[in-house]
Image (cartoon, rainbow, N blue to C red):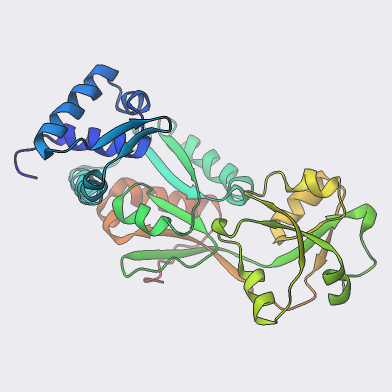
Length: 303
């Protein structure tokens, strides 16, 4: 990156991710004219428009998309190198950590994590990013997120993993219409609610597909949080992790049943990029997550 100001690199990366001059200025703690000026310098430097203003925001050009991969990784490596040269003091740090997880993770795990974070590092920030299972590998490699919590394996030689929870799937439905027991025949006779597989909870679907079984899906949702309200007003059936089923049934009149077919237990794990292991701050954050969830530290190799 010879001849390019590091501040320009940071502005480019933030603008690429925010897709908005206004949001980029807020995140960089500068004025909008400062971001616009930096963008004009970047355009001149790379001889490309880089971003085109549309109704949806600042859309990157093909050249900008190629540059982002390189500049994001370079910026992350520089930041980690600088961090590794100095000690991390949680009580004084104002660092922002970024964690990707599903809304299930937010409900079941985030309160424990954030409570301890506020106690140990009260001036830090935690940004939670909605999990997109097909993108998180790239997010970690580029440094867009510091870590990921999910139940599906994330492949990659550069990815590290620590199991934080072992879980199983169950069925949940309105208690008013629940049967005495849930047989496979009863399971298939009912209409089902399914949550998008992009959140990483598609294992039961894969097992049903292997069995050659097709169920009646009446509703597909993008997230889990609305599920109790929908089930409470319908006769639909849903498959969810057991701990979440417990939370939902405690707050609503919902009944939990074992699955009428065998689905392997799942490992909910914390994932991070090996490149981030040079950062004392991110190492501390991973230890805090493990401590908050009562997990013994046990780093595993690439998945």
